[in-house]
Image 1 (cartoon, rainbow, N blue to C red):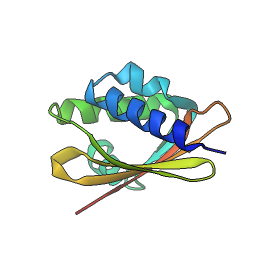
Image 2: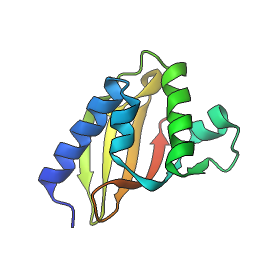
Image 3: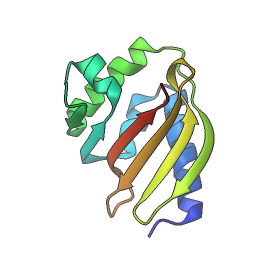
Image 4: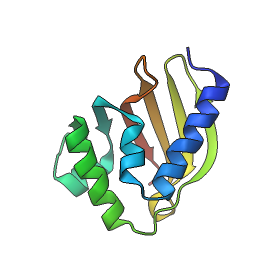
Length: 119
């Protein structure tokens, strides 16, 4: 079960890692078998399903995203807590609001990230 304290602390780590553009720091929060679904995957990686699997593939995607958006700065709006997941609601790329639904493994690493963006 995810606690409110864990959710708040993890969300801040997530935002801080992204804001520092620290790819190793971001990846350290993720499981080896991570899966990410995002509309940006179709655009940046030409993967029409919008889903990538494995740490190596996600690392390549996020490296490309950080390169394309060098001014990326997330601003945390709110953190929502679920049973085995949290939703990190924040301002993200191009002024869009983003909801990252992060599901965790038993080691509290992100195993699945489903990203939603405002249009």
